[in-house]
Image 1: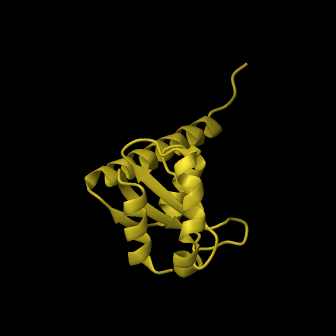
Image 2: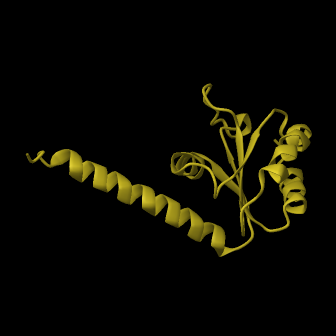
Length: 125
């Protein structure tokens, strides 16, 4: 995957873009068989599905394979965590991307701690 043209294209296609992430890309050697490669976009606001759908086709020449393009703000918390923990940030406009990552990963850690605590406490009747 050629990253510079990919980043340039996405920055032009989504002007309010804050960050670009890649997960499960053969180029990153993180592609499990069970999941399609993802390009996750973080924008200042929500990115409409109508804006996302054509991006996958437009990215094909740059990625060399079909990718799923998602808005990182609107995917499930599980997918957010997976994209941030297992993927790679290709580009960020400023510190807001890091703050978003911190919030998502911190919330996930808090949830995991709460689950562990509840699993170790006996059930009361």
